Amino acid sequence: MSSKNVSLKYANSIMYDLQKAFWDERGKGARFRMTTVGREYFKDKGLLELKADSVAAIVDTIAKMLKDEGVIADLTQKHDDRLLRLKVKGCLHHDIEEKFVAKGVEPFTCVPANLVVMALEQVLNRPVELAEIKVESGSCELLLVLFDPR
Image (tube, rainbow, N blue to C red; front, side, top):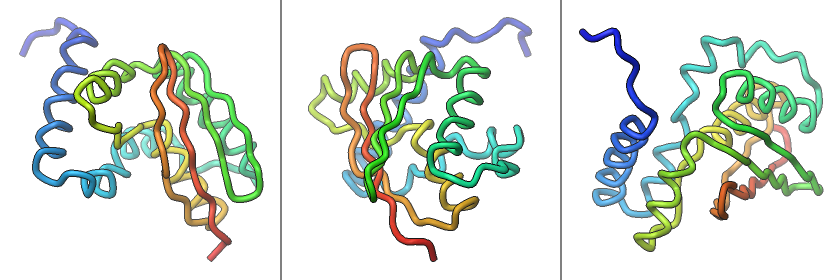
């Protein structure tokens, strides 16, 4: 095995090909099978050991983790009752989402969103659904729907 690092362009190209193959197989149903992408890596980093007690604190903690890992440049939030709007800037995987949009396919997975969903469900016991991903130049706007605690 080579000790050389793999380029981000190569890794994102492979990720795109895998996601595209899954989309071709499942269509919109792929979205509901991709909700765990990225979680295992961050579980090993202590994601489920969060001591936060609010939506805002959990999102802030995840934003810091993602920034520290170099996955994103910034993540901002607006929480309004059951709606949580996230804006992710400078994500390493943004190129993948832009490729999907260029092919007329609505993006259907997002690692930062997956981590927020997992943490809110685990820490606050609140079911959460990723409802929308809007891709802009250099950023993604995510809409998550929060349900009542179980």
